[in-house]
Amino acid sequence: MTKNPRWIACILIFIALLFIPRILSIHNLMLFEYGLTFAIVGLGFNLLLGYTGLLSFGHGAYFAAGAYTVGMIAKYLPEAYRLEILIPAALLFSLILSVIFGFLCVRHTKIFFSILALSLSMLLYALLFKLYHLTGGSDGLRVPLPSLLGISFKGIRRPEFLSGTYYYFLLIMFAASFVIMKGIVSSPFGKALQAIRDNEIRAELIGIRVRRYRLYAFCLSGLFVGLGGALWTFVNGHVTADLSHWVFSGEIVYMTLLGGFGIFEGPIIGAMVYTFLRLMVQGYTQYWMFFIGAILIGIVLLLPNGVAGAIAWLLIKLKRRKAAEGSTC
Amino acid sequence: MLIVDSLKKHFGFVKAVDNVNLEIKEGEIVSIIGTNGAGKTTLVNLISGYLKPDSGRILFLDKDITFASPYVRIKLGVGRSFQLIQLFGNTTVLDNVRTALFSKYGMIRRGLLPADRYSSVTDEAIKILENFNLADKKNLTPTGLSEGDLKILDIAIAFALKSRLLLLDEPTSGVATSDKFKVMDSIVSAIRREKISTLIIEHDMDIVSGYSDRVIVMHEGKVMAEGRPSEIMENKEVKAIVFGIVS
Image 1 (cartoon, rainbow over the protein chains, first blue to last red):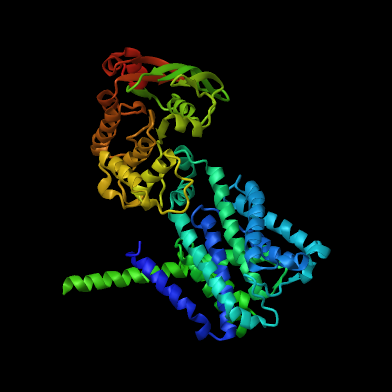
Image 2: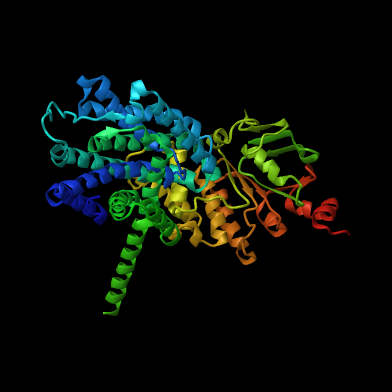
């Protein structure tokens, strides 16, 4: 495994990422952290879209499940407001939600699946929005700085927290998500999911219980998205019901398409590019949504495999050219 | 091994399968012939669990599987191929077979180690591909294969499930005439080696007489005649109805 150049590249990138807080300004570092949390979300989302062939327009719900777990614990159980409790709790609640919603959704595929996932997430949105006394309604919930392994961050301002301890915590979470997800998609379980994606009828007839495996994929996907949601809250400092709205779910779809859902690293690149792109375009014009939309059309028409697909294509081309030069010498 | 007992399946007024009785013995290769709409594919769909019959019984290895789910039948050892090829289009030839093996061994729940680490399964998949002369194409995706190779791969997957009974729905349809015998040779030699009972639906009489032990003729949902290939070829009624030869 260590001889594989891809793993060496990954380890080098990880080491480079350790030095990011020293390079980027606090503003850009925060954006980068948003990008990292969305990268985890993208990894989870793509298990469903890229590897199982199900397009969900309701993954904001699991993101909200993770985020609201943090917000609610901050409000009602302040003594448990510690990262080592918050993360498992967020995982648990997003898992519970995705088991319930997934159980209903995986009975269908294609557009029916997408719409059902969307409706269920809007159901959660309505609850979060209307149960004002519990969830803060449209005001949402404030997310203070958590403690980690007994270290309290009281008196520290958020930017300092984000550029110090929290960045490394986030990076470890991202690296773990990356390695675990990579394991999942290349394992026999991942092969079974890809078999379902490619041909449902045949998958059934080699003895895969298609619906059950779709549910497994759905729940795993919900778990990762929930983790992303929980980690996101500390960067953002605030959670609102909008997280479960279909527009936010659409942003998750957008990032994944932008990066390329056919490639494992695609959603990570998509999440990063989207986070920075959005801010850049927002800075230029108030018609930023128009530009974001136009870029999506361009991507779908010109780069069906997204940014990652374009990079991979360039790399292959360069390699071929090198090989051709090598053979002529 | 397989006993079909007065099986019936009607679609409205169409009697697709009407009171069919048949038996397949261990290691036997049986062909079903008949005109279009004779009910051949419906019969295979009933045996593989793709359709549920109106009445009648299907026994496999002395177990009643008439209403068992496809999943249960596969676990018991009923495998099938399709007239229209059903493959996993975006994965390699090797993974097409390997996924079937993982499923067969109940290993698809394993979600952390890469599939390549299970080298015994990979080796077995390669051995199966060698059996079917596909080993040199193991890293191609199905889009890079000829029609004949696709058919063989489809059957190799059913084979990987260690089926005791294989149902082959027109294994040579869509294959160039010059390749038909090559395709059948590699399929049948693998089947004979493992002594798998096989039910083949086929139109081409040269193939039927060349490769099967017994032939069943279906017409309008019923079994019209049954016997050794040479006997069937001489049967006047069969000649008239199936081949359109009046003598």
